[in-house]
Length: 110
Image 1: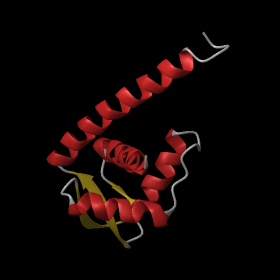
Image 2: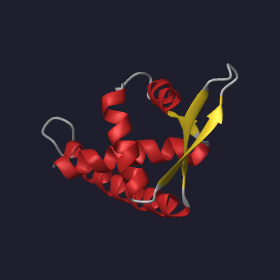
Image 3: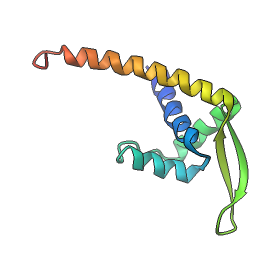
C-alpha cells in the first residue's frame, strides 16, 4: 500500500509541473489551493519527492532570478516525466474506479 501513496504523490507533483515550471514553495501553495486545502504538503515531504523524480529523469531543476533578485530553484517536467504522468494518471483512474465500485455496492449505498 505504501507504493500507492508514493505514486499518488508523484502524480500530484507531475500534474502541477505539466502546467508550468514551479519552485518548491509555489508547488506547496498551488497544491493546497487546487485541492481546497485537502493536500497540505510540507517541504520535508516535497523536496525528497522532487529529488527522486529528478534522479529518475522525470523532472529537471534550474536556477532563475525571482522578481526580488533572489535566485530560486525551479523544476520542469521532462518528456519521460510526461510519460510517467500519463501512466500514473491511468493507474489512479483504475484505482479510483475500483474504490467507487466498492463504495457504490456498500450496504445502505446501493
